[in-house]
Length: 464
Image 1 (tube, rainbow, N blue to C red):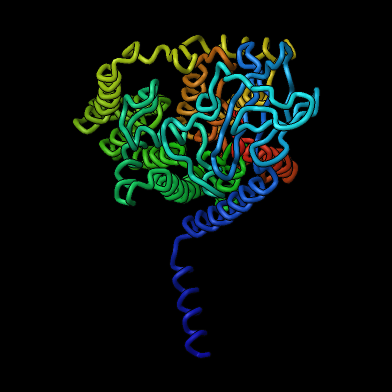
Image 2: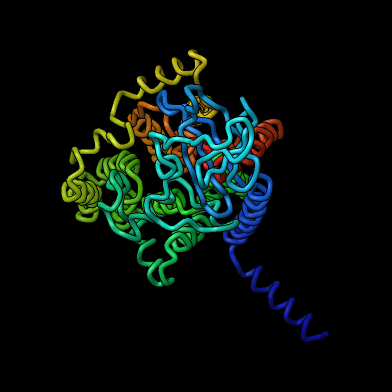
């Protein structure tokens, strides 16, 4: 009994020895990680399979996906010169609403009902295109529900390198490189490797965010900033094998290096950030400002500052070199034909979003993207003078840069995801949340949206 008491006493002392930033970061992460995992299991149990009646660019398609096993099918909905509407009825079977016939997806034929014996035709868009695994093996069970969308792009690059999937060069190399290295150490578990990288980077990011926010205001504000970061409606991207966590960590390291005037380290972190996500270019704006501000006082630019400015240029040159070697379209990333994306003025995206919603033919993601964009600009403009200048410049530049990407199939594409890493916004919201009404507004809006969008993501629903 005494030995047990001594163990817990020593454990408590060791916990107390950990800095408050790390204690809070680890605690919030563990709670969020457990809740996300439990929610994923609930979704898996409640929605074991997904059937969708789609209209893909005028082509009626029925798509089916088994959430637990990764089994997937896609067929044309034209049967006997009419379009049928289907609903899931069991193990890889569907029932059409028009005749109540039962259809086996494995055979692609009706096995009961008025249309028994009728055959479903192959769809113009295959199941591999609708549920794209990019040539990697699907994970099964509760862990596999986190293997969605860009996770598969990164995993494909990590496993087979660039060129294995058309369009993969649009994803910068650092994250898949780290995933590839760790994946080989783990015996080919590349998805697990990416997942681990993101979890570690997230915990570290939350600890740094706590310290930066506490230095800016106080510990209470820092705690709320960390909570708001993992509570944001699309924060689930942090908890799977996406590059958001790594990019946020590099960004926070960069600003910490700037504060300490560690110029070479700051330039190095910009170098890595730009090779993680293309919006890392936004970090060059506060970088140039800080060098100008320092030179304004000292009347000269140091060697370290010169090298710091050179490193982002090298990162950009290296990425363009990779694009040239890949040989996919333009060397400059001004257009991405495979992703229906190109560069355009930011206001074109706003006009496109408003027109789409006004037309009545829109998705929930379109509304959320527009609302999040408007909210991000409002928060930034409202709190511009409260933030350190470098934080404000980064946030403004990042918002404008991501709005330059015009996707022809969706306005303001993925803005709800891109805003995730703009940590100064969470700092401002945390500061204003000293007012309980503001705090409640943030929590009451973010929490249910988070649960809904996470569930949609897990069952291949487009949420960004």
